[in-house]
Image (cartoon, rainbow, N blue to C red; front, side, top):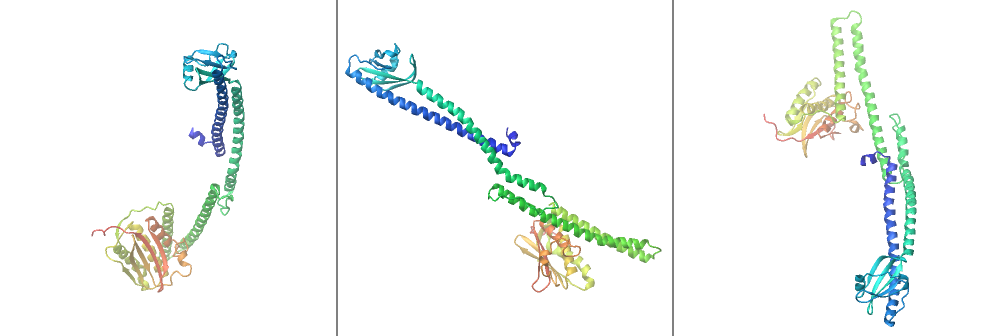
Amino acid sequence: MAGRLARLPIRLRLTLAVTTAMAVAFGALGIFIYLQFRHDVLRTLDEGLRSRARDVASLARDNERPRLDRLAQLYDPQGDRRFSSADLDGTRLLTPAQARRAAVGDVTVARLRTPEGDVRVLGTPVEGGASAVAESLVEPDHELTRLGALLLIAGPLALALAALAGHQVAGAALRPVDRMRARARSITERNLSERLPVPPAEDEVGRLGTTLNELLARLELAVAAERRVVADASHELRTPLTILRTELQLALRGQREAEELRAALASALAETERLGRLADDLLVLARADEGALPLRPRQLDVRSLLEERAKRLRTVVEESGRGVRVEAPDGTVVAADPDRAAQALDNLALNAANHGRGLIILCARAVGGEVELHVLDEGPGFGDGGVERAFERFSGDGIGLGLPIVEAIATAHGGRAGAQDRPEGGADAWIALPTGGPPPAG
């Protein structure tokens, strides 16, 4: 049943809920009204019976053979009938047992069938026995029947009106959702700047519309960033492909010397390697964006890691005469994938080598539960607005993916990446990785 209801339209479900609630409310109200009316009718009837019982008691006290009015009887203490009104025609209002109880206290018979019809009987003590008076229930029964019929007619009509009103109210409440749905259907990747119409009321529907508009804004930014990356990647791919095509065309022209062919093939190989690096970097970023960058973390000694990267960096900058220095305390350990950590540090180091000047310093600082691995240089720094754009794709170093990959690797490890200009001049780019346990043995 719950599954069937879940498949119904929301408007119909709301209408059914309102109708069910109103049916319960109308039913409870009808029962209350009927019982209250019945209680009032019987109370009025009992008050009339008590008044007549006092009159009968007065007649029994003042007359040896009282002449009783309609539907009245007198009994002796043993419960035998002594006197009766003529209209009862031999019918007893009280049984002997009831008469004996009435001689000592009031007794009420809710319904008794007599030749006059159903009656309500009240037995009370009187001098020398008990008295019983009765009142016809025909008129009260008729009034209760009329009330029940009215309730049975008016209740369904009121319920039908409530269901119709509930259906209209549900439609009005869901109309903003329909408008948002219609607008959402018209929004594609070409017009992500459009937004859903949000109702002015600060209710659930309004908050839903606001949240969806915020989602559209994030999607617009993400799609714009992806388009920018695709455009930049296409631009970056065009240059090495053009060079590669040119070199191959020159190599195929006429009779070329062996040295010329070797130089052309070397240039083509360099551009091919450049294309391969770009493809690898794009794959790393794609996996990082999907949260699926593969990691095999283990404990790494920070000083050994920095020394290895510094050794590789010296081969890159040795021709320029620039120096490379490592500053890291012994015994500092991070929990990281060795290949990814090395890749991140190489990107930071190459960024300093390509865009900085002077001495390059690789250092480590323990901050809280992380270790920050910094690469410092003495160049011009990032410049105005450069720090904010440093980790944007295709906006900075080389082909524009070095620092974004550093950030992706840091995020995959649960760490951070950052950059800033040094007060004394130069750039400071760093990656923060989680602190590991004790340094590995050996």
